[in-house]
Image 1 (cartoon, rainbow, N blue to C red):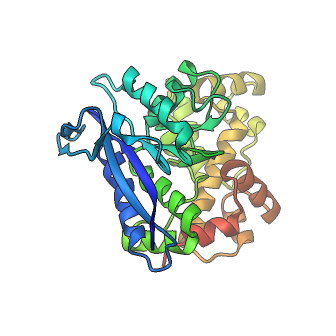
Image 2 (spheres, helix red, strand yellow):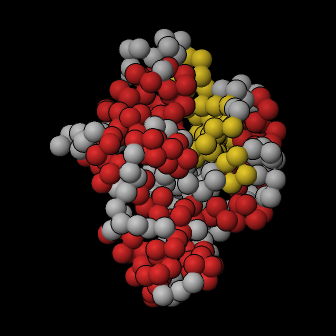
Length: 324
């Protein structure tokens, strides 16, 4: 294999350690694969050539300064950092270097809150992007010209990739390896790293119970718990409103105000979440999976998966099935 893919990872004070080392390890493992077409050369670039203290307190050494990187960049990877208040760090000099370097790179990728740096550099304008769910609203507010989707593990928009939080950096790196060397090499790397296979970009960052924060009204929280435990019941807005002893119109307004979702949207998300677990852990046929989750036909199951995850139930099972 020839050395032809120069991966430059930006490091700077406070950078998340896993954002740097996770992708670097994936690329290193890919270099060991006989079927890989080329090798990756990972270069850590920093502000001044001095060791950089990461968010974990571990210091890492850099190979080059930002000024020394030049135009020979295949993949530019930008991790993120948070300040003491949990706000993404936006350093103007780093943003300027990213803006100057990105046009020379074949592709650009951000990890976690590194998406805020790409947005500040103008690289996400007119694109769809993701970031850690905790800062997605801030990214959308600061950059209304970016379509922010807080749910996927990673998003590709042209030659710009954005990844979700923390461990999703590994999934993003595996997706880059798959683009370069094919799915077989990426899956082999995932097995070597003892990862949960290779999650698709459309797989949610987390499940329904996590993305729905507690409501201020206890009765709405209790209803949500009841929905999760009774997915095969009639969960139409009218039926749920009757259960709450509210008019349907008032119930719809209260539920959306408390949860940020319509009753129908919440119910479908909960049913898809349950179907995902069955597809991952059983060999039940699709009609049985759908029936067990209240998605009463295979066609309804397909439509819900397409709408929520951008894939089919069968494709999801092939990716994420675990041994019984």
